[in-house]
Image (tube, rainbow, N blue to C red):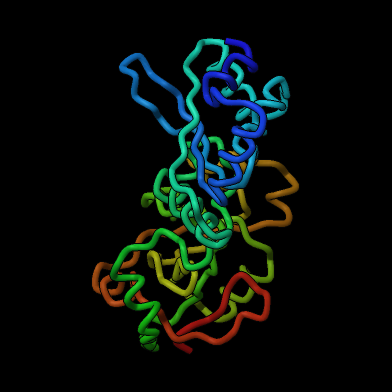
Length: 265
C-alpha cells in the first residue's frame, strides 16, 4: 500500500474537517502497530504529539539509517501497519507521563523507541522499592558488611541476574579499582536510583575483558580496554546479606560525580 492511500484510509476526511479533527485531539499518545496474521495489533513504537505528529514517521520511511523506518516501510508494503490512539485530550505533561509509562511497560528494548520518554514520576519500579523510596527510610550498612556501592546508570526493569551482574562488575576506571582495593572492600552493592538491586562478594580485580560478557555487546576485549579499564571477579553475596539490603535504600555519602561511594566504614 502506498503512503497516500494509507493516510486516506486512516483519515477519510480532508481539508478543514481533517484539520479540526486533529486539533480537537489536543495532546495525544499514539502507537504504531504491526498487524499479525490473527489481526492482532502488536505495538512497535509509542509516541506523543499534536496535529499531524503521528503521521510524521511516514515521511522518513525510506531512511535506511533507522530500524524504525525500515520496519514501518516493510509493514506498509505488506499492508500490515496500523496506527492507534492510546489517549487524547491530554495536557503536555499528561501525554509525556503516559508515553513514558507505556514504554516502561513494554520495555524500550522490545520496541523501536530509542529512549523511555520524558514523563515525571513515571518509572517502572517494584512496589516494595517504591515504598522504601517514598518513605525514605534508610538502612545503615553494618561494619562487617562494608563495601563499595556502585551507582548504576543503565539499569533496566527487565534485567535478570546476569544482566545486572555484568553491568555491575565492569568496566570501571583504575580509580575505582584502586580505591576498592585500598579500602579492602569485599562487597559490591549494585545501586540504581538509590535502591540496592543486588549485592556481590568481590574476590579480586582483573583487567576488563578478562572474563566473558554475554549480555553486553558494548564490551569488546581489546588491548586498550584491558590497559585502562577494570572489572571485579565476584559472586552473589550470602543470602542473609542480600536479604538485609536488596530492595532498600542504604545510608551513604555523596559521590561527587564518581560512579561509586563507600558504605559501612
